[in-house]
Length: 296
Image (cartoon, rainbow, N blue to C red; front, side, top):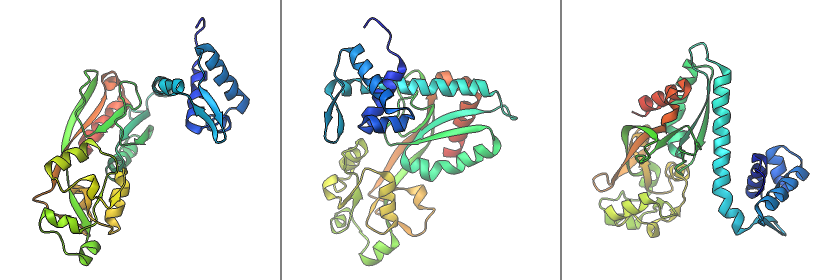
C-alpha cells in the first residue's frame, strides 16, 4: 500500500458490515449510496482484498472483512473519543466548571434500574454535562476508548485503568407472589425441579460458577431462557417463574419474594473504572465520583 487509507473508507466499510447493503449504510451514515460504493471499492483496491460478495439478501462480508472488523471498530472508537475530547476542550467550562460529554458503559439492569437517579442528580448539579449511556453486557474496552467510564462486575487488570471498588451486588432467586400463589414455594433445592426456572441461554462465566456452587441451577433446567438481564427481570415480575435478581433491587418491590435464600446467594464485585488519562478531565472526574458514591 503506497498511500495512507483515509478513515472515511473504513467508516463506510463498517456501515456496510452493519447494515448489509450499500443503501442501508448510506442511510445510517447520512451520505449518498454511490459514495459508500466508491469507498468500499477504494478500500478493496488499497488492501488488495475482496471484502464483500453479493447475494439475494444483500452484501455478505468475506472472511477477510470479518478479520478486519475489530480493527475498524477500534478506529471508530478512537475517532469518537477524539471528538468527545475536542468538544470538551472547545466547549470550555460550565458555570460550575464542568461541561462536555462523558460516555458511560454499564450492564442492562444496572443502566436501567440503578444509574438513572444518579445521572439525574448529576444533570441537576452540572447543567452543561452530557452523558452517553451504553447498555451492554459485553465488557467494553476502555483502552480502545469504547467508553470513558464503565461499571464492571469484574476487577480490571490493565495498569492503564483506574478503578474504585464499590459495594458488591448480592444476587438471589426470586419469584413474584402471583407465581408462588399458584405453586408451593420450594423448601429445598430439589423442589426447583417442579418449578418454571428462568435463566441464561448462553453459557456465561456467571452461569458456570452458579452451576458449580448449586448443581440444580443449570441451563438444561431453565424452561425460559434469555441472555437479556432485563428480559429475565421482566419475566420474574410478570410471574412467569423463578429467576435470579439483585437482592437490593427486589427489596424495592414487596411483590418479589426471595426463594431459598440459604441455598442460593451469589456475590458480584462491582468496580467503577476509567482510563488513567481521563483523571484530569473535570467532566469525567465528576461522573466517576458520582457513580462511586451512588453505587456505594
